[in-house]
Amino acid sequence: MPPSASNSRFVCSVCGYLSLRWYGRCPECGQWNTFEEQAPAPATGRKGAKRGDAQETPVVLSAVAPEEVTRFSSGLPELDRVLGGGFVPGSVLLLGGEPGIGKSTLLLSVADKVASTTGRSLYISGEESLGQVKLRADRLNVSSGELYFAAERDIDAILEMCSQLKPGFLVVDSIQTCEDRCIDSLPGSPAQIRSCATKLQEYAKLENVTVILVGHTVKTGDLAGPRLLEHLVDTVLYFEGELSHLYRIIRARKNRFGATGEVAVFGMDDSGLREIRNPSEFFLSERLENRSGCCVAACVQGNRPVLVEVQSLVTPSQYGTPRRIVGEIDQQKLLLIAAVMSKYLVHGLDKMDVFVKVAGGIRVNEPGIDLACGIAMISSYYDIPVRHDVACFGEIGLSGEVRMVPRIEDRVKEALRLGFSRVLVPHGFIGNTTSPGIIGVSTVEEGVRNALVKDGS
Image (tube, rainbow, N blue to C red; front, top):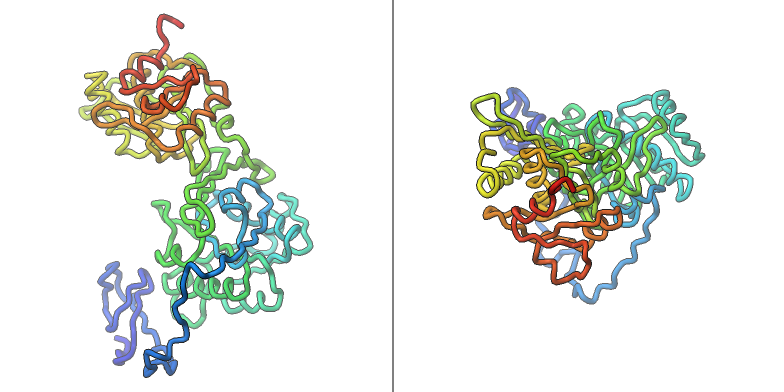
């Protein structure tokens, strides 16, 4: 057992649990022999300080002059929009995503563009060698003379490089590979991540350097490491998308300098990532006519309206318990919509298997997609196609009503812009428009009646 001095602390190297005594088994994560002793912090001379010795004094907040934030572009307009207009000097960003999703490809391209237009950039990799990164750089046509690279894991050595090179843009790929030699634990442990991220955050604020940290993810899709990592940074970006699909989505989960929930869509090809300026046309490009179980939904991703195709397949159940399977929307949402459809429209739906997906694999987590899901289910059940010129949106309540959702005007404009002549909207919006193509529906029955093809028309 390690010595247990009265002023010593012990930290679990797996979960970061802090204790004043040593444990053989961690009370938090249950792992054995993971506690490591931390030396007590040196005295700072503040222990006996009086209350009147405080360095900071309160100020009147309304009298403080606002600071002007001068942003610089990433070279990708879609990414700039997600960031709120570009990178902010002195900010720290965290980019997470599955292995192979394209994080390193994106950041190497961004670092090259920033180095060409704004100033010196430094790309640090703790996972790849110079030769490996050079192969990717040649494929991406990276050619800036102000882009520097180093394969380094020691956080103090990285900061020493920065003090000599003085870059304005720093990429650390990844934070889980960084190591602080002052902490006796393996790279990637909560204590190591906490220490390295704190040092990089202090460097970014002190030197006014924009720092991007690449973060690993766990099976659930969340960022690995202590939750403190997400609280410490200014912006958290998630790189989403299935490896088998041709598109990738960057979504802002946290942004101190812009709106959260914003998304940027990129396509993946042999030359790297390319921006998709019109996601609606991209997701509807392979849509077929006269197919039952398909309905177009006008959704909102961040502040951007996006049209997606909701597909449903309703078949007789081959097992004792009917299945409800969904990939891109919440499982509980599917159960709720299927229950409402079974009670008010199709009484035998509770004995059928129901499968729902969003074509292209884009994940949608907003109530505006409810009405399209319900219409697609009924269309598949009766094998009647949805009118090809119909798009819809609205939240479905438990009593079968169609409720209002945010940003209705933007959804309608996007649907009309793409050529849909009939847009089914919640009835409460009808008083705000005079367009003949806008059809208000109060219940799911009205929505189905106006959406399905009748008499072969």
